[in-house]
Length: 126
Image (tube, rainbow, N blue to C red; front, side, top):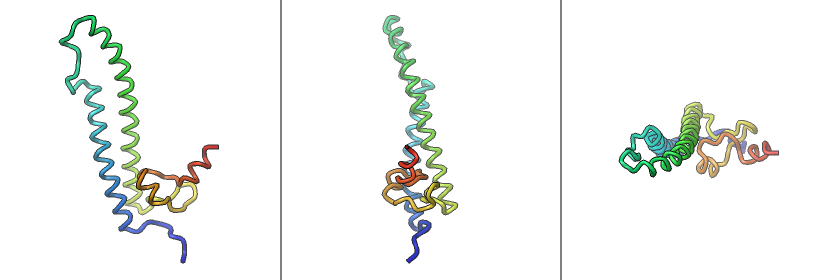
């Protein structure tokens, strides 16, 4: 029997469902991060004492930087999931971009936006 070169339509639908669920959660997290950056969450120090306000503003700067990094990372994750959906449409999902072989289902279930098999990923980290 020849080696399988792509996942079946049914398998692709299974992965699509996993990706859509992760995408929905990721988008929700991103929206929460974005809301906290714009102050839309209403959690500020406008009604507190001036001394506390100065201390809080320093912490807010650090917190905003961290929140910005988290939001950027979340957006990159969302874009990776969206690209995976495109690969499903093109029926190229799950094919390692280095080896051309199928990425194991277990890896794709854990990291649905993966484009490299573990072997290819590890060989690139010399």
